[in-house]
Amino acid sequence: MIQIGIVGCGVIGNRLAAAIDDHDRYELAAACDLDADRAASLATDHGTDRTATTTDHASLVERDGLDAVYVGVPPLAHREVVADALAADKHVICEKPIAADAETGRELVALAEETDRITAVNLPFRYTPGFVRLREAVAAGEIGAPRRVELRFRFPEWPREWQDVAWLESREQGGPLREVGTHFLFGVQELFGPIEAVSADVGYSGPDAYEADVVGTFRADGVRGTIDLLCDHAGEEENSITVVGDEASLSLTAWYRLVRNRGRDDEEPLVDERGDTVSALLTEFAAAVDDDGGDLVSFAEATRVQAVLDAIHASEGDRVRPGIDAGGE
Image (cartoon, rainbow, N blue to C red; front, top):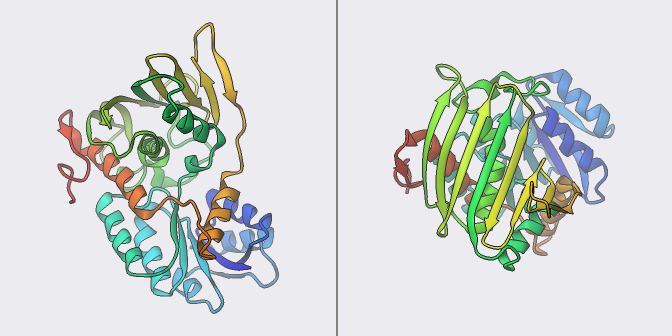
């Protein structure tokens, strides 16, 4: 059994703990949160009578017999927790985004490269059935030559009602681009490789507050893309990625539904299955720990996504090359 500890016992931490409950390769050994009651609640709901709780992540990562650490704290705290876990010779799963900025992400890449520990970032499109089918269809030429990739986000309220955490409102580490856009920009990277250039006009909801209005373009492997984000408006929430080819289009909506030629008379649903992406991540991570493969999103892949987010914020309408014009190598 892989003995795993969870640092950060919020919504995502509890989701991971529930998946650990159902997985035959893991046991929840420890839980950490600055709120002692939250750590205790997670341990009670998902652990055993041997599950330890603490408010200090440093004591958790040093725990004897612990094999791996899941890092589910806000982005600004990722570096410290990940670095301490690696220094304690633990394997690490880090929640997305890898960090609040790409510079910190590159530091984490370097730290991971100095160890033989398994590291991964939780970006579930790698395992989402609808997205996997989208990736395979585009690669197989089922829509013809890709002509455009379109990202569209609508948030009537930000943070969303169920996200009761103040840090999501901050420009420094929150906002819908980091929280949601990360997934879809990773999706573009899965489809076409690294995004080479971006240009965006970004409007913010207030000083030091999250982006509420983004209109931009980007390019990856010669395919042009658009990003259209709006918060605090009348209407329904929407998150979608559409790849338009010269023969057909494919749209992934609501995180998992894949539709061919969405909105046309010949619209055809292709996938309507959520899949258990957290369980898939745990399975692939266990395979990697066992030195038996393991299809994981690397720290480097996640950092390339964060470099795109940095570039969008830095653009001010100008063309920016992620990781170059926005800072970094």
